[in-house]
Length: 309
Image (cartoon, rainbow, N blue to C red; front, side, top):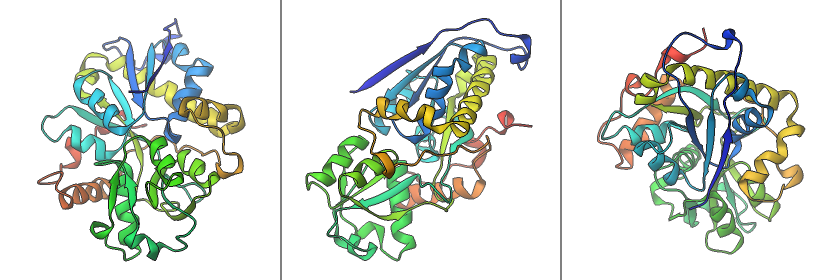
C-alpha cells in the first residue's frame, strides 16, 4: 500500500486563532492524491496549520478503499472523502460526520470524468465498453450518474474494478479497459496519453468532495478541528490566488508527470455544507446498487455546527 506522510509541527499562535475552549491534540488527515488534496498541501507548505497551532499529519492513500478503512478504524482522524464514503463508513456504526464541501465541479473544471480509448468517439459507444471504476466509490457513483443522464443504462455497462486511480489510468493505455472513470489530475494524465473525455460532471451538481471527521475526534479534539478548518480554508484561498505556485505539489504527491495543458488548476469553493439533494441522490444510488438497505438521513451524515457563520 502506497502511503506518503507529511507532518506539520505545532507552534504557538495568537489567541485569535482559538475559536473557543475545547479538546486539543494532533490530527491525522487522510486523502487521495487527487485534486482535492491541493488545499491541504498548500496549507502544509505555507505553514497555515502551524500558524493556527495545530499539528497535522497528512496521509495520502493510493485508493479510496484504503482511505476509508483507515477512517473507519481510527487510523486517521479525518479525511477528504465524499458522501458515498461517509455513508458506507456509517452504515454499521455511527462513526463520522461531514463538516463541509472541499471541492465540487465548476463550469470550467470537472471532478469525475469518463475517459475512453480513441476508437470510442461518442458516449453511445460506452454501452458495450469495459469501464474501469473503483467499487463503492465517488467515481463509481459519478460514472453511473453520467451514463444514466445520457440514456445509457449504467447496470448494463461491463465494469472492471480497479481501485488506485493511477492503475485505472494505466489500464486505458494498456488495453485492460476501454474506458475509465477518473478524478483529476488522473483524467488529464489519461488524456495526455491519448484518451478522450466522453462524459464529465463539469457544470453539474452530481459530485463533490467533502471533509469527514470521526465523531470521537469532534468530541475530544474540538479546538484542534476548528484550527484545522482555518488552515484548510487558507490553503484553498492561496491555491486560488496563485495556482501556478502550488501546481507541482499535486503531481509530486500523485507520482505522475505534469501533463501540461491537459490539466487546469481549480478554484476551490468557500466552505459550505453539502446540499440535502446531493445527499439524497447518493443515498438512492447506494440503495439501487445494493450497498445500503435504506438511505441514511442527512443529520446522520452532516454536522452543520461547523459551517461558517
